[in-house]
Amino acid sequence: MGFPGLALICVAALLGPLLALPRKWHIPVVIGELLAGIIVGRTGLNLVNPAEPTFTFLADMGFALVMFVAGSHVPVRDRQIRAALGSGAVRLLAVAAVAAAAGIGLAALFGNGHAPLYIVLLASSSAALVLPIVGSLKLSGPPVLAMTAQVAMADTLAITALPLALNPATAGRAALGSAAVLASAAVVLVILRRADREGLRRRVHRLSENRKFALELRIQLAVLFALAGLAVWSHVSIMLAGFAFGLAVSAVGEPRRLAHQLFALTEGFLGPLFFLWLGASLDLGELGTHPQMLLLGLALGVGAIGVHSVSRFFGLPLPLGVLSASQLGVPIAAATIGLQQNLLAPGEPAALVLGALVTMAAATVAGAVQSRAGAAAGAKG
Image (cartoon, rainbow, N blue to C red):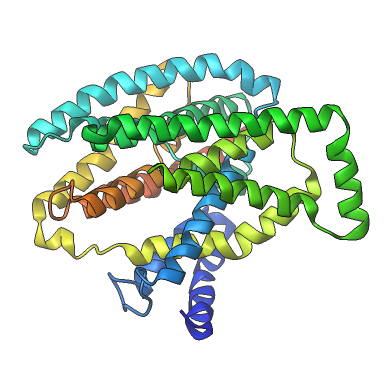
């Protein structure tokens, strides 16, 4: 990839902010970036090659950072979110039970043995999508905190369970890899807590700020990419590495200056590049070649929305239940691993991505509905 191609990617990614600019549309930036990728990628004009090694590597960096930022935005230290963990866990158990029945039914309906995979997909959420939507629409309040707790737990569990569900033959190796990544993130958390207690973090922060060294950013990027390398080596998705490290940083507390630096790096370049690469990688034409996979994709998307809507019976507003169904990393990882290891039927990877796109569209609408409801309640108050 040369500079002209990189310039094209950056210009195309501007579609995200352009679509998000009209506030009344309530469209998250990531939707426009995905659409831009679809337009310039395999499905559309084929102007960029998502298989190009440099493009792929930069997208992996962006994915790791997006998941890290998503994890760091989970308010782990907030007492309210801690209180919401119990109710979130109850809702997650209910969602998982319904997902199990729906996943088994879909596998029987489409005549394949992928029930474990469908169960994980139907029960999963995407903090990388949900949290940006919550932030961009300024959603707040106890129900949003409860939904955030549920999404964080669902995302982490789905990321861990995916390799086991997709290829049971390698379940042991995947479990060991996930355990290694999580254990490493836990060690990082212990080190960060000790550095914080001993005042080392504050001294590094003051030195970095006074001398303009950006030491904290450099150190965190080094740790993040080391964990991502461990994930790749142990055949685990870098989603787990980024999200687990983000949770560790959130548990200790992230300096505002560092948050601004990460925001600039992620949202200004590597994040949009990742979402554009993701859209460019999709070949939606496969769905026309295999019509049954089109039905499978729609069933997975609608099924996930229905499964997560069960949260309404446990006190969560319906729009937030639909928002919690939003998917991204887990279906993409499933499609990628399935293609690499030849585990899925022709057209099935595209079906998994189509299901994710259905949940994204529903999440966009649900976020807008919840935003309007919050605004109306504020006006009455």
